Length: 339
Ligand code: DAH
Image (cartoon, helix red, strand yellow):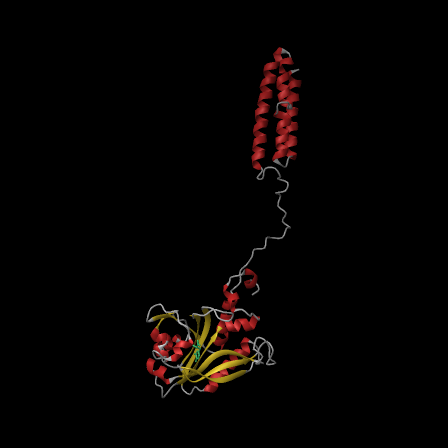
């Protein structure tokens, strides 16, 4: 008779363990726990009914039932802890066939991209790349570039003054002086960088980017300038991009020229972008003024050279068909993510 009771208890235990094996969520484990160990659970009922057993069977049956109750309780708790996510372990099974999450990846700013492209093209034409300071002395920004004090040409650029003698550079041309001071000829160098002018509208921002070029050697003539710039624009836009040189004035070049390119939008037909002229003003250039050679100690009788400076935003606007320069600096992701 005791045997029967014990067998019965073993069966209950085994049945509980079988059910646990099929359980996949903590909810199911909890159900098993209630079914066996709860107030009206199978084991609980069993313990309650022990008093109905013959007296001599009660101690052994009670002991065995309590042992199984404790073991089962521990087993169920351990199984529940093993499940990472409580109620829906079924859903947390990993589906390895699902596609991975796509992470948003940044891109280089369009100005950085165009800047790099310009540097690459000039590198391929044999130019070195250098950089100068954005806070400049009056000497480098003006005086050494042949802008005497009170010369009206200083008004061409609305200067941000740091102090009487220190400015935010208004152009990258000071780098011409800094380079020639340090290196004897021949020099063939460009410098990309930020420049500052007190100006803001559809085509001007207080900070913008320029690329400046300088080439000095024996027997350099205006036709070399023409050749280099033509090669550059053919690569930057395409081979149909013809150039037009217009006489101009800059204190640091003589002769000076402003360069137009055939409108890249309408190919010279005339459109809104080129104000119906068919041409786009794109850069300033000229033959290095002998006064600069004197300022840096170059032999002006032996060497000649050319210089040019152009705006990066202007070129980026033409390349991408952008009509408001301020877009570059508003950091609007809808705009930037197109590049
Ligand atoms: N520095 C001039 C400007 O910002 C552009 C320029 C003109 C640069 C003629 C040059 C040059 O090197 O030769 O307006």
